[in-house]
View 1 (cartoon, protein in one colour):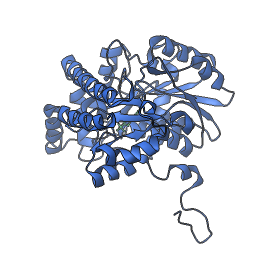
View 2 (cartoon, rainbow, N blue to C red; view 1 turned 180 degrees about the vertical axis):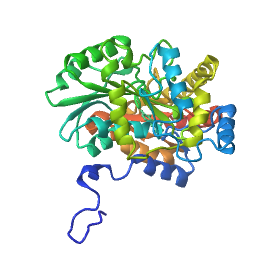
View 3 (spheres, helix red, strand yellow; view 1 turned 60 degrees about the vertical axis):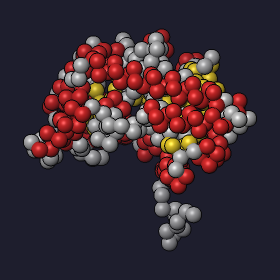
Amino acid sequence: MTRMTSSARPLLSRRLAEFGTTIFAEMSALALSTGAINLGQGFPDTDGPEEVREAAVRALRDGLGNQYPPGPGVPELRTAVAAHQQRRYGLSCDPDGEVLVTAGATEAIAASLLALVEPGDEVIALEPYYDSYAACIAMAGGRRVPVTLRPHEGSFRLDLDELRDAVTDRTRLLLINTPHNPTGTVLTRAELAAIAELAVERDLLVVTDEVYEHLVFDEAEHVPLATFPGMRERTVTIGSAGKTFSFTGWKVGWVTGAPDLVAAVRSAKQFLTYVASGPFQYAVAEALCLPDSYFADLRADMLAKRDLLAGGLERAGFKVFRPAGTYFITTDIRPLGESDGFTFCRALPERCGVVAIPNAVFYDHREQGAPFVRFAFCKRTGVLEEATSRLKTLAA
Ligand SMILES: *Cc1c(COP(=O)(O)O)cnc(C)c1O
């Protein structure tokens, strides 16, 4: 029921009316009440490296970050973020002025859109999209313009002509996400080069959510959009410790970009949280300096989990889009004789004790997403084995 005020006006603003509750709350409640294995929401069920956890404890004990840290983030973390961008991608950024620490990537997305979008501006985003994009575009008063990734030979692909056609005189910003949640697509160097050319040609800003930068598999390679010609001065790059270090509760994210862009994002950010996660900022500074072997091991571990769950889903009868990145697998349920992901996901916990998310929630064109269902594989091996054995009953 929608509660009305005395003037018969809905409580929730029109801007947010369509974002009342998320599917994750419904599905997590269903997981609890049925005892099902929750492969819905994407958080790891084991914590990240012990030494990083210890670094947070040390910071707390030593009184580092227990009071408001500096607005842009603690210098140790800004320096570590800059060093990470340099070491991995050859991107130089000045820790003073070109790095901003945020309360997770979530705040970075919100602050970027609130800072850069005027009411009425069009924002192009790759559909299906991460659920906060639509809400944040709405909060900024922008108009979202989806460009749909479509299944093609085993993965979801961007149609570059469609992207080009979506740009109008009112387009302000491209909101890109690679590696892409929920499809697992990693945009190729050629696709990114074409996006960059389009952004330069039409003088667009780009906000790029790269929180899964370290989770790429097989031959896929993560290339930051900011590395392409003409992109440095127009690109806001978003990163986060949550997915890379398996501490999603710490909410430490960051923005890197040219000084005027970072200053603009900071203007919005200072009135959202102002600052957050003080002691955790010191711990993440240490985490970013972990040797390359940490990142290689993370990737190998997640790759094994991807293959375990993907194999189980295939044996259960799903069509599997084996992801090149992220820790999600998108499946097509039509080979199981199903066509509606919502109905399927609501029944799945009772049918076989597993929770998944219907991809339709990530679409404006819900019918485009109807037959697709997302499973997270960032779980312990034993949990994934149990889930695959439960899912096998679907094939029977
Ligand atoms: C998890 C996720 C985020 C949010 O990251 P936090 O650092 O936890 O706020 C942002 N974008 C995408 C695509 C994600 O999957």
